Length: 100
Image (cartoon, rainbow, N blue to C red):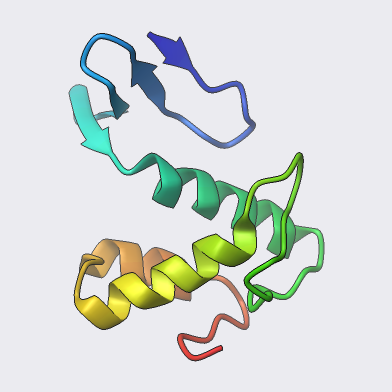
């Protein structure tokens, strides 16, 4: 297993099962790494004064495709593929808009 060292991110990658997991409720649950990593990078971007509504080609940090993450989260919401907790977490970013 490999654990992230990124600040404010808490996930591990299991090489055997090829899944990403997060510690929750005294156990481990499978998570969507792209969603979780993107949320962490977006939090850092917004905390640094950035606007959450970035162009699709925008990268953050050491090259995370934050613009692709924004486009994918908008697509997932439109398709009904985000749960209410995920929607609320994204909407908590000041200035977030579902329509770019």
